[in-house]
Image (tube, rainbow, N blue to C red; front, side, top):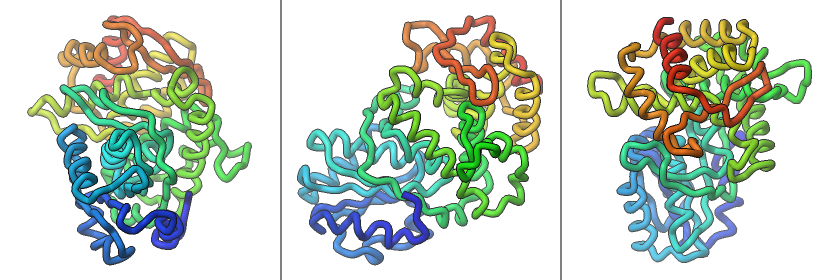
Amino acid sequence: MFCKDIQSALLPILSHYDPDQVVWIVDEQVHSLSGDFQGCYGGVTGYETISEDDKSLQTVERIWDLLLEKGITRRGLLVAVGGGVLTDVAGFAAATYRRGIDWVAVPTTLLAMVDASTGGKTGINYKGMKNMIGAFYPPEETIIWSGWLETLPAKEMLSGFGEIVKMGLIEPSAVNHQPSDRLWEALMRYDLDTMPIEDLTPLIKACVEAKERIVAADPKEEGLRKVLNFGHTFGHALEQFSIINSQLSIIPHGHAVLYGMVAETYLSVVKLGCPKEVLQQLTQMVIHYYGKPECKCSDRGKLIELMKRDKKNEHAGEINCTLVRGIGEPVINQVITEAEAEEAWEYLFSL
């Protein structure tokens, strides 16, 4: 649900639940900027602020403890207000508490709006592996209000924009339902440094509608939905490597996925004949807005080991990617060799 007023969008949903059965999980930053949600909406039984940085079982346990403390039954409702990490964690807590209670997602970052808000994936990181433990458990409602974006720093906006770029590459999505205006071509017209927030709304809508179509056709990622993994095999490895290597700055998810898309588009050119123009356009965009990744060619071995541990791999030790033949032409289940992975990393790190 897209809305112009977050309060008027939430109140009808809350009216279907007993006030003593509603619990709020709110990002600490959102809480500091937006004030006390209990004061805004009243009748809140439980209220907890958590950090976006901790996608762990310990955070889920804090939420379970709150639900137990407040006596939330299977008739309860959990409202998650924050970025993609928070909604993933809170959604997983909702999925597993008493074998499942209702929850509502209120994404507050661009990344969460275009990615985590749709599809029902919930979960946590485990033993150094991203999203290794989780469940498919869609929220009862997702409420998207672009007003949240006014408070986001540029780095967070760029992270979210990475997922918009991904959707532009894998889906022949139309902006404002105009078949002649595909999402990728629309992206090429924008200057991210000066784009007004209101111009993002049709792009967010195009992404959400495209992802909803994909998820409806394949809710549990048995086939078609794997197209959404484009950029993630390389991107997750890069993101995780930046987290475990204390000498590097942590690479935000959206930035890492964009770097991953560069590597995987390179392989798409080599293996599937994707037009070189697509790789050139993507590479120029990434270098201009995101700069070069801090890693270097000598890190390839460690990155490849992380790729082998990715949850998307169907067989132990393999490296499975989604590639593209061209704009809107993704190809899933592309197993690549270590040599091909090394070649793609070399292209990325030589930019």
